[in-house]
Image (cartoon, rainbow, N blue to C red; front, top):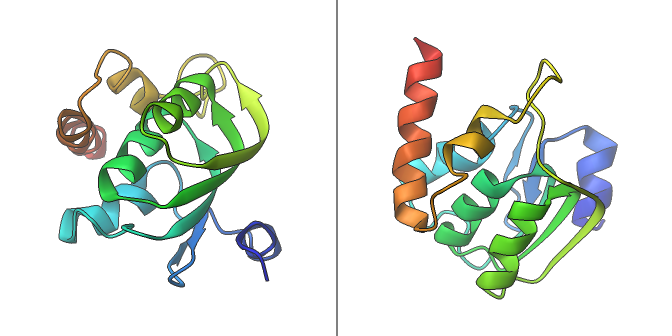
Length: 133
């Protein structure tokens, strides 16, 4: 079963060629395992429902081999192109919207003006900690 089909058939938010799957929302399924092993996604193919700049930067930092997204933001697409990560997608959007549907996702906003991958990782971790309080 291809990763795309596995993603859709099981309603996962992400699945990878190593067998990693998650149903968590947002960037948690990407940043979570990276907190234990920064290069958790190294050499893996990944399929994700929504990839914005934040997820793209995390997956790139972690060494992902290639990516499929149901939906990708233009900024996420630019990251994969800059780092020569092969990617495919079904739908391209200007940016990932927040859960209220009235603006940009806070994670995408957090990395909007960041270009360094490790700086993005640190900023996203800080943002998640702020939001969980």
